[in-house]
Image (cartoon, rainbow, N blue to C red; front, side, top):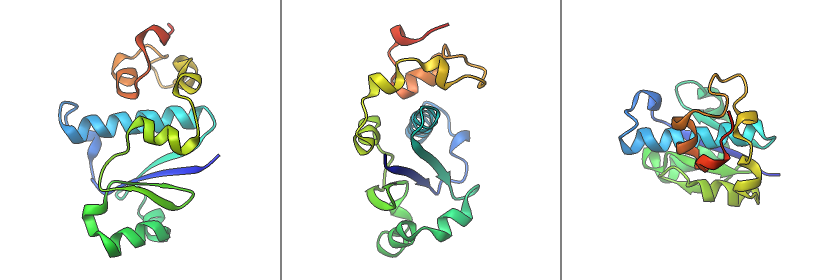
Length: 138
C-alpha cells in the first residue's frame, strides 16, 4: 500500500469555520486520513506549523516550493511523488491512490473512531468523510 501525505501550509485550518471552503475541506480530508490510518493505511495530514521538520526533509515539498511556491499547497504525495498540488484532494482521489474501496474501508466507522469520543455516531465527523448515515453504528 502506498504512503500518502497531505501537506498544508495553513497555520490554523482547524480554526476555520466549517462553513468556509477551507474549513470544510480541511475537516473532510483530515477525517478521511484519520479513518484510513485507523484502518491500517499509511495516510497522514501534515501541517507546516506542527510538522515543520518533515516539510524541510521532504523532497516533494521542496520541489513544490521551487516550482509553485505557496500556491502549490495544500498538496498530496503518494510514495513521495506529488500527485495533487494547490488544493485539497477529494475522497475519491485519496482512495484511488490507495487502490481502495470506500465502502470496505469505512463500513464500520465506530471502530475507526474508538477512543475519539464520537464512537462512530458523530454526524460532523461522518458527514465530512462521506460515510453513509446508514453505516453509522451506535
